[in-house]
Length: 382
Image (cartoon, rainbow, N blue to C red; front, side):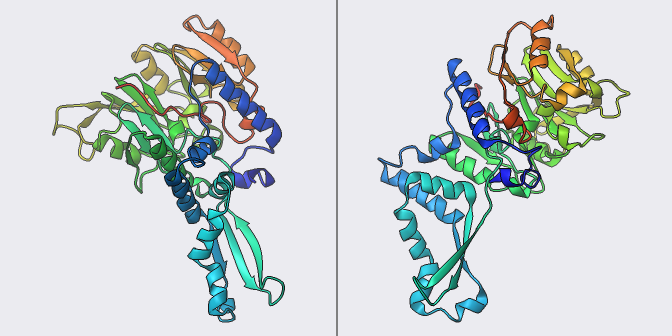
């Protein structure tokens, strides 16, 4: 449904849904060819519902929360007690019980509201329909982050995406995955702003989408699990084209990364600055930050990376806008890139010692994201 009005659905440009589905299928097949176990949200929601009564009931209960029946106040006075049954919860339960699992999943993905008015003929009712579809759910990176401690449920800025967090949380619980907590207002955290860099370090972007309050909550409750947290501040740019850290940066290996060239250097008008928080003995942390203390402040991002042993491959502004920075590291420097020129640059970079595969993905990028955005790690080794 998001394709009906791309900008209103947070898309960058119009999209061909048939082609986008094919490209996403090719992406999943590529991940599987590297030994990854890949599940879609729909597959998780449907899993077990044909054989397990409890799984079926859980899906029905979830769908009941997403389906609403409404009648205007002026019409209520014209409805009999018998008529009122057909806009109530019991009738809704009967309707959902007869639906297939795919129908129930469609309800979860579209959040329909059925507006009921009496018709005084035929079946006695007339219905019109309103939907709030989860048109960005292809981007499964953002609803949460996965640290070595477990999954931290995020909080999304855009109202169009607000319902996604509860749906992915339902999926993770169904899979038996460890959820350590969730961000509460006024915190905001989106997974495109998070990069794990081993047990020692993680990067969190703050700016247009995520904020420092969410980072503070994670440090206070020790959800990051890392010895050091690098908060990468977008104080000067704040552009939709660079909304998340993964729009401008990616880790290619233990000592290798790429970054938008335009934001590199102290004199860049769109530079990112890093505040580094370090784990300290219990009780010695900065107030409100748990056992983390602010150690370094306002360090230019590329300088911070160099200080930590990274060789940085600059990516031009033109290539960044074509999602050159939004690549996916499947481990051991096995990279999937959606921009052909960037894929070639990574392969030629003298400090890169891995493999790059190019994947056409233009109909997914039409929706403002690429392969890092449309994937999520659900478990990290401690």
